[in-house]
Image (cartoon, rainbow, N blue to C red; front, side):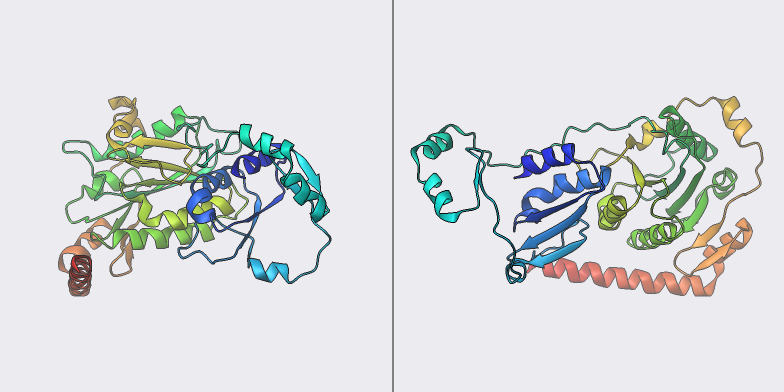
Length: 351
């Protein structure tokens, strides 16, 4: 079934609609199909006799229970034998075919595929930019807890290094970067002087805030406008359900960077991936760094994601993090909530 569906997609480019009637979509098809849908989107209908226990990451146009569909009278269907390439609308004739010697012989020599052949498993990474995406805007969400600035590394070099990697693949659109982390000890002046926006958070909270920012960014980018999302993190799976929905329903591409390669391929379809340290070790010279960032004046925004505090002043931001009573109270509440949650999960898993 899956092989036939992939062949049909190759022969019928969108706009088109496909429908799958099966209880196995979530367990058998979804990983590969969701990657196909991220590259080439079809309207997708699903029907099943048992509603999936876990939500399927596939975006569907409509879903039905099988019994609901059978209540509607339709014309007689075509009964088809894939092994013999035989079809009939007469049930009696079709049953006769299934009990025939010719059918038994074909069944005996037909290769049986017990596993779904994943057609996207060998898709490469780091594709050259297509004309549609070459000048598209790029939004980067950077988790500094997982991928910090290396010791001794010039923070002013982060943005130029990332942009150089984009340009090597042919992407030259405007880039916006937001760095999430505990910014009490971040080199704010150097980082913000290159236009990197700063978002203060604590471990365990950064992904919730990041997911919220992704939703806000999507609201500002029309569905049919080409745009690129990039996540720099070792834990992109935490927000992957939201990302994969956007990738299926919008004209977006996805870049990833991480400090170590994932042990298995994600169902997120990416156009480019990098190791964090190799990304920072791009082809930059000291001259190019200085020419792109001669000013030490901040050109970025500073956000405290714990208190909903925003400012364009580094001094005001530092004062807020170090001495603001409201901020200290929010940190205490979040730390207590996180500790209680971890304790609950520990007890739950031990039982």
